[in-house]
Length: 138
Figure 1 (cartoon, helix red, strand yellow):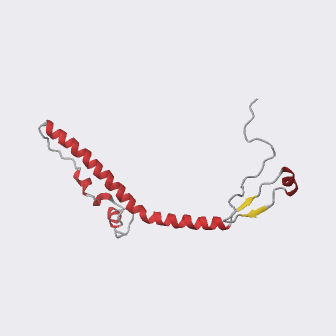
Figure 2 (figure 1 turned 180 degrees about the vertical axis):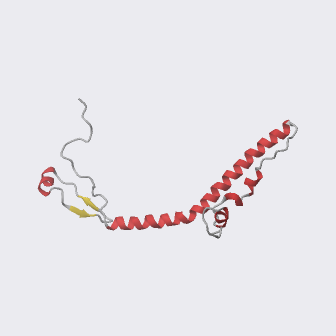
């Protein structure tokens, strides 16, 4: 079965065409191994080490910007999704009003109120029956 390599997700051609591959960057090709023996030179080693550090910095910076550019679209989607969830949560939030122990027993804690924008002072806490949540140690 013949397939177009740009449409098959596991091929290099697809990754490159979709902008998912970092091989577009020339710094990766720059670091190829050279199997040619070179006579030892102290200055050459120092400049090589400096160049390796610099290439590493450039590569890390380019990888970060590459990742940020790819994630920009998903960041917008996440923001829109979070806004939508907040709107849904605001419209359907119900809180239990704090009650005295006697009122709680008579109503069994079933009294609920709607949260409005102006009533931020309402508590979401439900009073306990005097028991602690901790573990008792003998």
